[in-house]
Length: 266
Image 1 (cartoon, rainbow, N blue to C red):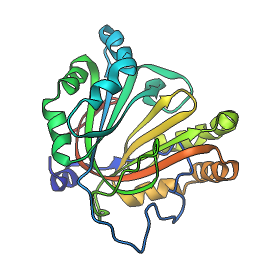
Image 2: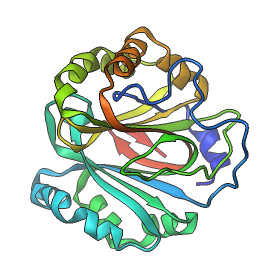
Image 3: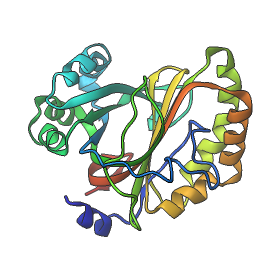
Image 4: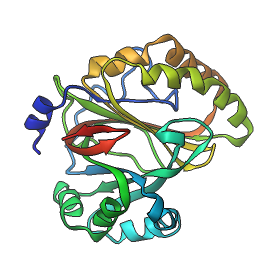
């Protein structure tokens, strides 16, 4: 699916900072202004899967063997195998079946080949009761993940859907304080206007958390970022210095298909 057809076919997009304070507050730029950088050919792939009960051992094995398997795929620069909260949400209780995979590719063609021909992707499809895949081009990035930045590969869209990825490494000494702020913002995200998809993901329990979302427009994402519960969580995270590292990326979705939490995207 090309970008134009995606913008016409999606009624709304993905958002979702359950991890707060990474640059999405009211009016803050999420990328440097006043300078022009050449766009890269980088592309990001996010897979979300709800593993079938009969395949749970295969699913658990992804946390042990999955990252080495995906890093052998052509063109992969960065990869993370991610768990999820209960029912794909953002709470402390982990999901026994839902998980995600995030890959940064050095060129768009490699990302497309990965989804079209990789045995690993086919295995996710075969073992999943629900499966969703999306290709994304970053257009702004603040911060880093294990020292890696997602460099811009697209211009900011004028309209249509966008996606967001927010992640943070939470300081262990402040984890309890951080999690006490999270539930109100999570509940407001579930009801946020224009949010098509929201998935709570985690690289490690409690301390290394991420949120992936898709929205129908930048305006919808920004409106959520300025809501009371979310704004209070952002303010608290800044004042508390909860994070040792954080990143917030906005993307243009290049292709989105599959089913997540009962909702089909095509």
